[in-house]
Amino acid sequence: MKTGTDAILLGVWTDVSNIINVLDIGSGSGIISLFIAARSNANITAVESDSASVIESSVNFASSDFADRLQVVHTNFNEYKTEVKFDLIVSNPPFFTHDLHSPSKRKTNTRHTESLSFEQLCSGASKLMNDSARFCVVLPYTQSEVFKEVAQKSGLYPSKELFIFPRRGAEPNRINIEFKKQRTHSCKKDFFVLREENNKFTDQYKELLGNYYLSIPEQ
Image (tube, rainbow, N blue to C red; front, side, top):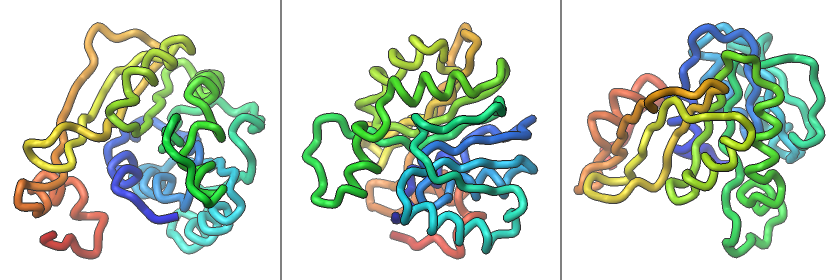
């Protein structure tokens, strides 16, 4: 699976303070787990149902400096069993609900909610979180209100949001949301613009992600 900006931004944006055990749901190549490992001393479990992605993430984990703190479990999240309560759960979940399916079953399972519905994701995450844990996801902006309604039914409430704009002057197309089990009086809202109107990466993009790329092209 290709590494996308969605996963990279979530991996860099997520609050990693005071975490010991982390769960990455639908980990793909393992990129979010690797970001969390690089930014913390936590032990990270990645759950992935796609066999090719499990192999890919296993190789990436073993090749990293954090191999002793990373493990991948080959299973569907709905069937994942553990006694561990996590301090942080992250996910770049499948989110297409009515779009045309890809001829590739692998891509369909990765991108569409048939493999993991919003209800299953939120309910499962809530059960695996300790009382002070955070649950961080990246979603299409158009799906965010529906997801928040589903999350609330599982006792999860937004505490922080990052609105992601593909280009200055455009509407947001993605959003990072941090959920907690405690209701908050106000949800912190921030804004992130990837590109200027001339298609060059913004200074904001370079400042946040510059340390994680070998180089950032002008366009």
